[in-house]
Length: 339
Ligand SMILES: NC(=O)c1ccc[n+]([C@@H]2O[C@H](COP(=O)([O-])OP(=O)(O)OC[C@H]3O[C@@H](n4cnc5c(N)ncnc54)[C@H](OP(=O)(O)O)[C@@H]3O)[C@@H](O)[C@H]2O)c1
Image (tube, rainbow, N blue to C red; front, side, top):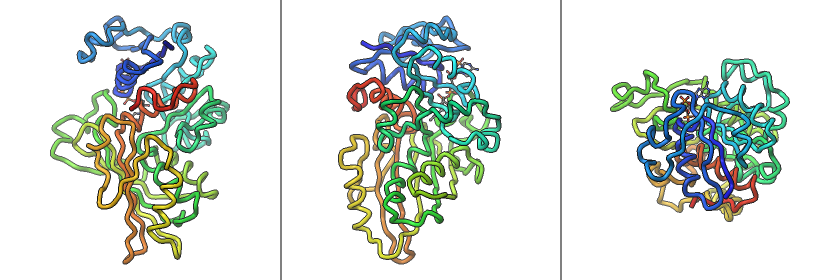
């Protein structure tokens, strides 16, 4: 059995990593860290792990993390930036779940994340871990920047369309909705039960930090700059992201062309499910899974293509995709522990 370290194990994505790795056939959680709960058992924090993961949470000791075969950093952005370079110095492969190593341009960080990025060399070195489109680079990577939840739900359906030049790159509107676990475990007032239950609201309109990440991925697919509108919403559910994307079809492109393209690109992808009409993606259908469900409709009246995707933000949007990346990095079957 290979050993995994999870730095920031008490957060929602850390907890999900522990859950997935506890059932993994080739890797087990071995070293779990927490600042606030050091000395307590993981099962004390999450009692559903009584009898399955009783590891003691420890304050991060980089040397200890380095005794593991793979290290996951499941820390807030800004904190990962400080800690990941030390984790990499152990010589072990690292999967970082934060946004700190996803953008290639350091100058974007003050604008979108509110801090100066002083690790440009690591931005150049990190590999963006969207396996369906970057598998070979992930295989060779020492540092994988695990994609954001919204960017995963958007890029999986849109990259093929832009690569094949079937839609206009200048006219993309993304309307996305997330469950509250997307905001993490640390209590914050807008995510307090009375604030978000029986409520539905947009947030960070024109200013969400996932905007440049999505633009970066789609620009690489289109071979030119992409500027898009991305509006996230908070939905009173615990898990799940539903993204509805509005695109303009290139002249002459028909619904059958889109269907044929998706079938070709995603035929052998174990975690992409193309839904046949009349089915449409629903967050419940992907809850607790590493699947991304995708469907689309061409609207003849407006010339628009509407693409809809659903993922579980904590699985394909975070921990599941991180385990998928780990499997690739360690030469294990890509679906191990995820089906
Ligand atoms: N939630 C999602 O759906 C989602 C999806 C994709 C990506 N992500 C990203 O994944 C990362 C983790 O997200 P999350 O939702 O799991 O967050 P979270 O629930 O707020 O957990 C954060 C974790 O980081 C630890 N931590 C906080 N500050 C620390 C510090 N200064 N030093 C060491 N450890 C510290 C906390 O540990 P203690 O309090 O125990 O010390 C906790 O274990 C974030 O960067 C987030 O953007 C989240």
